[in-house]
Length: 458
Ligand code: SF4
View 1 (cartoon, rainbow, N blue to C red):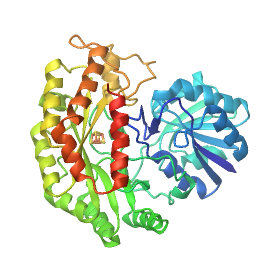
View 2 (cartoon, rainbow, N blue to C red; view 1 turned 90 degrees about the vertical axis):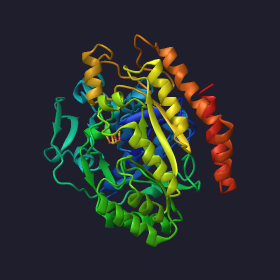
View 3 (tube, protein in one colour; view 1 turned 180 degrees about the vertical axis):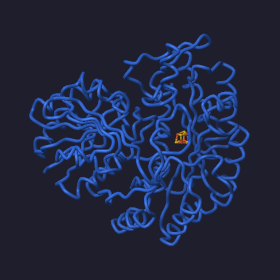
């Protein structure tokens, strides 16, 4: 069967993957990891094509022409709360034109049955991109489905959620070659052409605002990962965005991966980790394996807020981890979340001061949103801060979702913009950045990302 993996068109550069969605904060766009994983699974039985309308910046009309040319029987499409109205409009029309439409995305990660009642064009909603559910949904072998919602022949909507067994999973090799070569940008890449790599799925930590912690945690066999990396190297790709949400959760496995990467000799990569996993031994192993940049969650300077959101560490531990990373020769990215219902002008100012004091190479600020399926969403619904039918939101920071007695939405958004400007426009920071750049292409990339970031935060 011809199956099209689709990232639908959008008015903005949307990032929809891994049950999150947002507008890009600068200009970056990486390969949607859900579609990458599904490309491997689907290719074992079907003729698969990928159409990433965001990477190719296709208009809805251009996208329809490309879909017509591909003649798929089934479209498996990303959807996102950030673009839900556009996605519904585009995909319902494709359904009217005779395509079977299956979807995956944050907006159907919770109450998928209810959403499908409202949206008759959806045949099925996937809730895991690392298993074989997509194959069972396409061929109608519903008895094997583990986690999905689908419409039966008689129109009944059925949901199933069987907890994943075991601690590992295998993924047929993701078909990187099906994705466009142009159109993806990664702010931290040392080499413009890069690939997105997933060596595990989910996260065992319970941070209450994060959807990834609701997905369980499983790992891929290291041999499978290395085989994928070697295929990428053979095609000329040596720059990787390792999309594991916390690299190093299983220490011995992480050391084995770093060692294998080091043996390859020419890999260069970025990874997320947590401050409490970033000890010197781990950071040195990552550096030896070719890692040049680590991204760690700071979130807030307030230990009280870190505790409320069950981060499992304090701000002082975060500062120590960033110092260790710098000492090991790694560039650092700190991610922050602002606009929480408990934020006050004081917590926000403290957070800004912390960001400036950490000697970060880059800072990434997210606006708090009630992600589907999280404890945070349930809590804010119960408190009347979120409605069950609030489906549209953007963590990328185009607007603020929450307000409280101390700060309305405008003030939250204004603070976020000020935070970005005061961090990035410090002369000492700009000088340090300039000195750290080691090629013209890296300089071009950073200027492009920097200007795009500032234009969104004026
Ligand atoms: S450690 Fe990171 S990925 Fe894991 S639950 Fe917390 S915020 Fe999410």
